[in-house]
Length: 133
Length: 183
Image: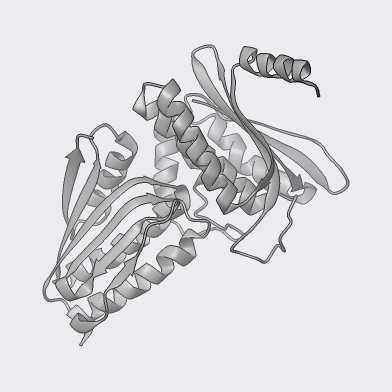
């Protein structure tokens, strides 16, 4: 059963975010800054794990994803897009997916990218959460 | 250089309003350390958060471009992690603006491709840059790219005016590539 697939926890580094994917609780979180040398490798692994988890849900259940990234470089942006694409597909298949998009209240770049995600991935229950730092 | 010459050198750097300069090898670790130094510096010197963010973002894109693509490489071309390449980066102030300048050698055969990427960005409005960014975000990654093909677009998006670039003769099969962004 995929609902028992092991959780994934990766500690933050100076250039990569904390990954806290509690598949067993259906709660996923990314937090910190993201500019690893090889974003395709870093996020490729995450996308693969999330896809496997979502396949196991088979269009049922509810997932909450909290994203609180304070900076991400261009190659991370591309990979995040792929990650949300996977979630959007699952949401289209019936799994309820809540995306909590946390950003600093005056960070226009991250807010705009959130708006972009909201538009591109309409099946996600997108919630813009502006934080007054 | 004696103490007196060093004092003169430091005074001249301050007079030129140069905030940061590095010439040497770029790796993920040196980029991370420089990013921290730049963040600390601008937390003190620049009150506008969006300006600080743009400076930081441009710095990371430029520095990682050097790590990934400079022709002055210590690591083999096929190596994808732990790359080390040579280049330089400078951050300074001019009038009311900051600028970032970076330089690294590139293969002569890569010059045309770089021109084709950069030249169109110079005449685009900010809305056109954002549109191109959105399209590239959705596109398949380009052949030979180690990132998303979004690096120059990100720098162009953060800049307050057109990007400037230049190629000057270097040695043998390489030319020196300069890129300047004004924030």
